[in-house]
Length: 626
Image (cartoon, rainbow, N blue to C red):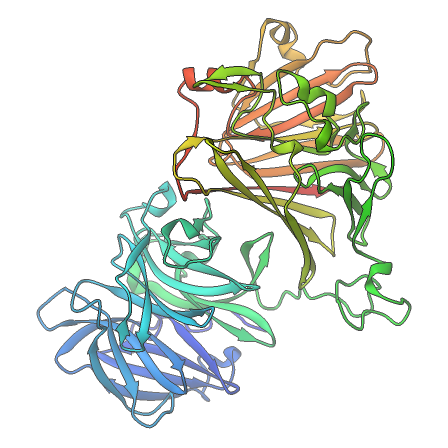
């Protein structure tokens, strides 16, 4: 068990707690720190003994004519050990990244200063770290105001000019001072994830943020997608958590960082903390080490891909994804991917319809709406006017966009049909993989035209194998040479029996705007569901929400429900589509970056979003099913 803090600040001893970096090498842990203008490496028998008597302290370098050395990191590169740190020349406040090399090839021997990193020089730069991707090594560092990345040609020199990939943008990155610093790179599967510290390191609101690399080139600024919210913030007994490193313990990823035990103590109160780190839906999460989230071996559906249980022939007996084809009717030949998580969540991806979700059930209870159109192959799609409705399967998810959402219209010389074309476009490819206790399904859909827009949708479904949770993550890239309109709406559809007159809908809106006069007549009852009514005319309501939206649809009569969460900064528009008709009985809960009034109206209101060449727009929607 790890008891935090593992290394408490002692005002009567040398400070070993700032900017903690830990390297795990050949069964031992090596904690690198700076004190009294000297570099030290402490050898630890275990992380639980961070401040124990077994800790061996080694003075590895006198910084000599340099002083105030910041954030040393120990790295093993091609069999040699290097320390990257950021000292300043005496009498100067201009810190710069220096490299030190082990003289005897061990992590605790003497280190020789090799000077500033070639390609950075003695320009203000701190917090350098290194990582590898596809056989190439990269250095990431910061000026506090900007995080940079560059390819390395050797441990002491850069091969390319540094490229800026992150500046302080959001309010939580600008508390007391505008700061992004302390980069550390880890991997979610094969995907690099950059974790960084934000805001002034002296304040209680110092915190950790993250960026995922969504593109193929680490040197491309648009390849790095920042997560909109901090991933580790202050809590009781832990203030200003930040400047972390990552190591392993018992096969788990763990995060080592500094924080204050007492609010308002700034740099003088920092102690070292450790938490377990893990990815959930692509987001890095943290928990105390003594909490065990590993799956139990005696669980017949424990999420393991090998040696699961002697009771079954293979894992597909319990969970998995299987492709099927429809025969006959307008859906003839359509590819369907049937997905089961072994815990009661079952859904169908319509691969020939943008990999949308045509059916979804939990423990045998249907959650979506399957329209009278049924399955309709893309060959029957009518893109003109309201022709979309002849192919509207609805299902649990229909994606609308990518260049028009809502009403047919004329805009900028284009005739645009209802809800755009993406939802009637087949996926180019898909794949299924497994990571820890999750099933990952990825699909690629192209929305392109000659003499027009060229957008590519990369869609990822993350399916929990231990609980009934599902995440939909989309990244849309403009692969063309011109800026084009970008509109996207997630048309999630709730149907019977989850939807009935007993259903309770909770939408935490700060304001609600009816779409038209007909909707305004019943604004007070916008969240009250009704029995199916002949001749019912649809009503739409626009709900304004901020921060993380949490929308709930629960039916206490059947004991089932769902919770949807997403970031309103990325999907600022939410439409409630209330359609209580006979046979056309459906509730739409629809986050997007546009309202369904048509692109021309969004342009007139100044709400039309554009996407630049090479730009990537990413959104995530998370579901928990009861």
